[in-house]
Picture 1 (cartoon, rainbow, N blue to C red):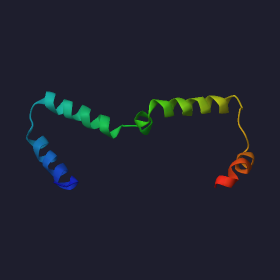
Picture 2: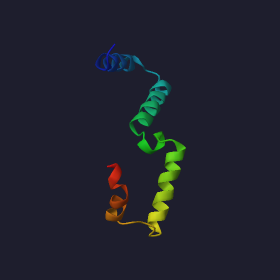
Picture 3: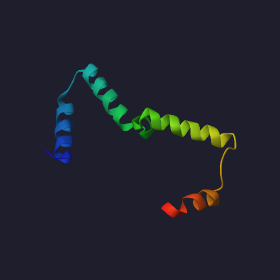
Picture 4: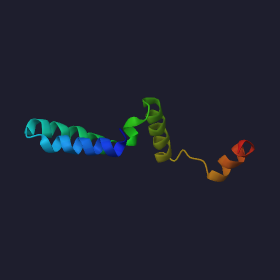
Amino acid sequence: MNTVELKSDLHNLIDKVEDPIILNALRAILSKEVRRDFWDELPLSVQESVKKGMEQANRGETRPHSEVMKKYKKWL
């Protein structure tokens, strides 16, 4: 079953549901999927590294792009 067929099948099944508890549970599940943030999908080690970099940048601990490019040009 491809994605379009699966969605259609789910729509048909949901249309038959009358129980508000089930409908609210489905809404909660689907809302979570829609609101998923890529940040939450990143490994904790990556999140910590990004946070550390942002803190360093906020303290002014940065280097100009041109300086970084000089150092790493041989690998690019």
